[in-house]
Image 1 (cartoon, helix red, strand yellow):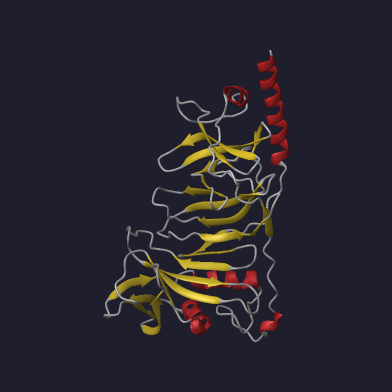
Image 2 (tube, rainbow, N blue to C red; image 1 turned 60 degrees about the horizontal axis):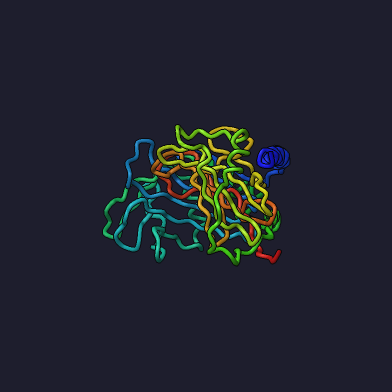
Length: 354
């Protein structure tokens, strides 16, 4: 009788807490968009990214992408570069537009990126926006292939519209005479007060007990074949709480969990300030390819549109003692060779004592 009463109480608590979790408001999140052969997106602080995509019939390892990153505000930085999808010999890549060389990018130390001189970024973007064809060449003068400019002007116009710089002297796609002083200041990036990494982070957290399994079974719907739908793993979340991840779905390259928090002996659905799911609307969000980093105190997800990982969505969260708070979201909607996904939301984190 005691066990049955406990299970009933847990089930009631589950549904009560779930109703509260659903009502949690989302933070303001941008979106990745596509114009022709270009992808573009801006985050909540008006920092924007744009990049060229590979051809529709691209092969793995083919191509180099033109990349743009521009911050909001009159003094927002402006960067143009190249991201290689394969190993490139040498440290310099020449860019030709409409048959004439316009700039040379130099390799950035330690990664696959090449960067053009920031001093020429505005003029270079003007040439990109107005150009019809673009081709890249290595240090020996051999062609590294074409880059599509189809959609480049529309992508840059999108950035300039979001940032309020269209028609100003700082623009590249819609250049005008308005001074930089007319450009509005971007919204402030929020700061999240998060719980510090737990002192007991190296301890082992306990998974679901039999009584917890029995209480949750009527409320948790999982698609996990003939295996136990409440297969789970637990990690230390804070000095007073554990995170329990219940495996709920399994595919070829996406593995989904639903999250619960155990605190003071009570198990409740984890709350998120951004409720999301992959592929369908759910009252309890699927967390896809979930990873908990105990050293950084972050919960990350990585939902791939296909196995190669050149499209999908990714999020990072921190725990503030009551819910998981979104610190970053990245998106790439077209599966066209880009391993870099565009940031559409970010937040700063301040670690505080409870």
